[in-house]
Image 1 (spheres, rainbow over the protein chains, first blue to last red):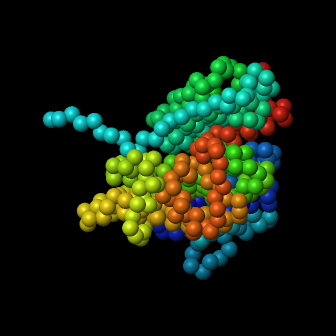
Image 2: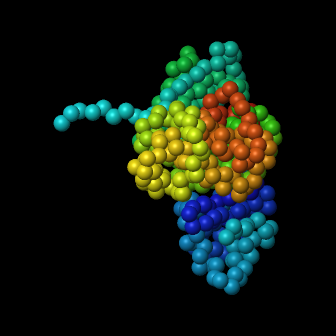
Image 3: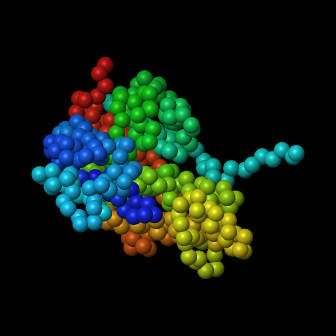
Length: 95
Length: 295
């Protein structure tokens, strides 16, 4: 499942996509993110029949990821720590 | 000063329904789904995976109360005692605040599952336009979510916005769709769907001499465009189904469908109950797996 967390408002589209089929809930993204955008939960709330843990964007962050993620997004576009930390390649950003 | 009773144009009819052909006494598992949304609350009672009864009500200021009212209203239609239910799942905004629920599941999973049931397994894209958010969901033939996007930060283009407009223009919410087509020429959409900005823009248009119908048409168009921009992000795979209260508003949906270039699926069920039905179906799946309530 492609889980898009974030929002669209008048200033643009801000979504972090987690491919839950690739995610195994290892938690590397949680450690890599300097502002704790990610959490790993034992039960995927969007897929109650799944048994393995899965990463998702924390509830208190998903409405402000434009600002939370901003420090990792300077103009020269280095790789994002969360995208780089995820060995499975499950994380992507829309902006 | 003269007392004035203000008419509530936004108020829609609450309803409950029972399937007369189902005998609950014969059922093995009776599961209940309660969807406490931001604007409306639904409950669905299902007997072995079939819809037995449901109720659709307005959410009050108190989630547990709203859940209780919705369940009682559905039970009212039947002669089933409440303690007969085997499993109860809460969903929607107020899902953690449903006191009788055994567990809660997000409305994304429930809407996909519910749409899969009420529209049929051909559904691949579900658009849920609720009271305060828009969800675009793709699912497989079993109703399992494969891709979803939810905009819950901004209420632009949602049911509550439409309620505000029906009140502003003094048009009953049930008539908004029909009235919005009674225009000589389709006006361009209002420039912002943000409820606050759109409201002040609409007031300006009315003062400029636009008719109520033209303003409604302009707002419906802007909402359709807003909804389309979200649906477009995840893409539309046929068949396409719409759930939630906005599915009943022709003014928005008939303007949205030409943009998507697809036919929407038609059903006999109330589109607002999809979330509650999905929740009840998950309950049924848990019971079948032996993960039901411990007795």
